[in-house]
Image 1 (cartoon, rainbow over the protein chains, first blue to last red):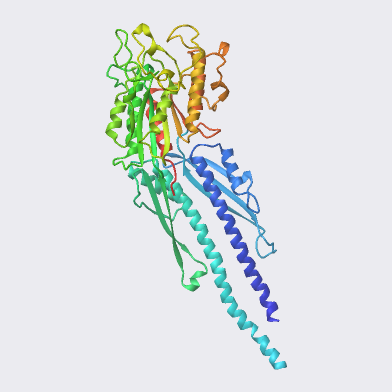
Image 2 (cartoon, one colour; image 1 turned 120 degrees about the horizontal axis):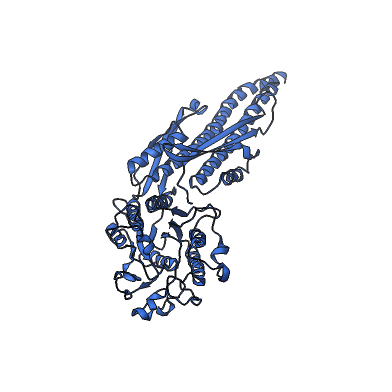
Length: 121
Length: 427
């Protein structure tokens, strides 16, 4: 009888732990892809499309892959020098969809800003 | 029996209560350790960005640290940067710490955990660099007698190279980076050929003993650079020979087997071949002239096709030039094949700059006839293309090719190349 009461409670905790751990793992991939995209851009070697492509390749392992429109590249100026800002977002669906307990999807984003070298011509 | 059953059942709740504590502990580990991993990843990203943004400002350490602080803050607001000492002059190490609040671990007494990250940018391995300077007559054009005016190409090239040496070697060279200097015209020899009357006696081939081998000695480098005067004249322009001697210097006995090797060549991409150093009508030939094959050299950089118009120099804009371009390209590919990086500073390649990449079909076309090169504007397209093909740019980019349309632009180009060499993460 008590088991019936307690079991759902424990299940929610366990599922929660798994979801959070899975999401963090994915978030680290998102951070790394934004970093590597900015690093490629910082060398002034690549077009925006090439940078986006790198991000897509690096995030390909995610359960909900990042799409082109999730990658934003800004060429800007920080402290008087050229900089590039790469933002990668990922709309994530949950492993287990429990209605009313947690939202179906949530969006996580990471942004990296790096200084850009003068370009070759 | 009944009592016993009830007693067993009544124990579930206390057990659950105990388990709950264990579960929260697990939850804490999973979520808080996860948070730490995320924070650490974000942190090292921010510190990488800071180190890279700062290293470009070296040897100005204050500017480097300022830039690093700004870029650290741009990526991660709460972090506080410090700058631990580095092993070498031309490195910037950025270290930062911050504390991460714990949600669950607080129950066990861990309210917050300090994390830190460190990144170092600059040179990780020894680097050997040779500067290969165009020292032909083009470089003297527009100069006053003292070669001190700002639109004097050779003055700007020398100033740019002096600054390049000072910036990269720093105040107190530690030996991680060595630089050498090679100049090029049309030939190299042990002695000058006989100048015609009125010609400067220093004209003619660059002498082999005028090279500066790889060194950390800035005084030697500055002296070698000061030798360049753009005297040029008769012996033509042989980019291929310049690259070949650059290769010799950057791989000779002073180079380190584990070093990253770089050739920086200043060139207008305009090959002109002359056999004047062998020309008996001027009291020549001088012995041991390179790139001729008759001095023990391979003759790699000498065009084999016969001179079509029968003149030695000035009108030799014929099939030989096509050959020269092809041979220069082959020489560059030979050098790049040894993992030696080539940066090209194109000076005064006339005609509008284009964003086109190296076209290997043009550079290897030695067909002659109607497609032969002319010295004037159509040739310039090929000059620029040749420069782009020499540079070891990443495919689909021109990241190792820079252009200075005017003499005053040369220092900025050398500065950009120095930045590019330094702009690497070590750890």
